[in-house]
Image (cartoon, rainbow, N blue to C red; front, side, top):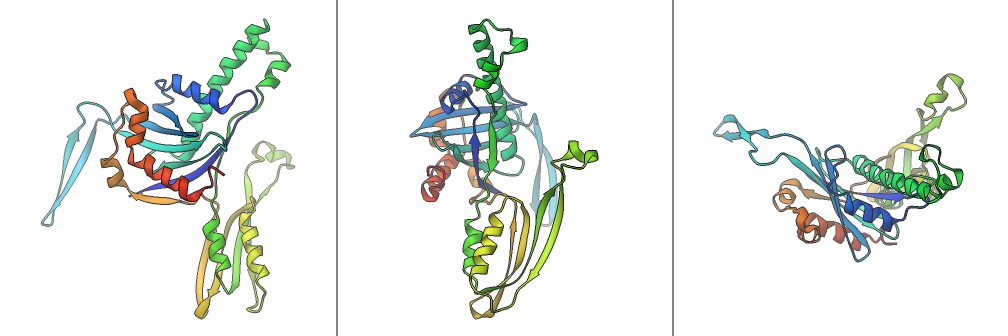
Amino acid sequence: MDVKVMAFEINLGKGITMSSLYNHIVVTSENAVQKQLLYVDQKDGWWRGVLLTSKDIKAFSRMVREKGIVRISPEAIHNGELAHFNFFLLNAQTQRGYFQYYHGSSSLHGFCDVLKKKYNDLKDILLTDACRKFDADISNIPTHITRQFSGNLRYEIVLRKKSFKELIEGLNYIKNITFQFKEYIPAQPLFRPLAEKAKSIRHRLTFTTHHDNSLLSDIVALGNANVIKDLRGIGVAEGNIEKPFRLLNEPETLERFDFNDVVLATEFDSRDIPQSLDDAPMMKHLLNIAEQDGWAAA
């Protein structure tokens, strides 16, 4: 099993800064959000942190294979419980970052949901404080206060399409492409509550072998369009070699690491968060990716 790294970006509403959100996360780090604990430290303009998820599992099965024989035996966790971890790196200025994931751990969506919960809790505190300041009723917050804190934390799983662009531009020509995009139907009364439900339309285009290179740029632009759900095709490279390609509307894995290597070298102690993050091998990997990639700090 691999440990993967993906890119993400967040945006905040009015009245709440990255600094105030950071401070709130620090002071509420022991407050679990659906059995998940969020710890963060700040260094050199980066949020460095980890999301710990308790699985409330105190036993597992060990399988041993030896000389054609398979044995399964129970193993109990006597002191503690099974936990998963997700390390992350977030630039405090650009609000762009990198997130580590493996099967069984929290998804990037789950991590951002925890961030949103922390954000909303802070927003409620600030709204209450503002109402007290203006002697306003918290059950009927004045418009000038709600406007001061309008908006919410939004996030985006960033689709890194650099490798797709490099692949297409390295081809001699394109034989054909099939692409699928989303079409929203908000005008239909019966489905107005489901306006975000998409209908998929699939198209297939076949090209002559004599098209100019502008088609390659056009296909890269098509892949970058937000409405594209799926794009695939066949290109031809040097030596008349056919190269099938496919671009899914999914986050690109920036790097992969061996699960066992990462887990066996990972320790964390909430009594010294900065040191624990300094020592975490995954955090070193994320910092290396950030330095080489340059996107998050741009």
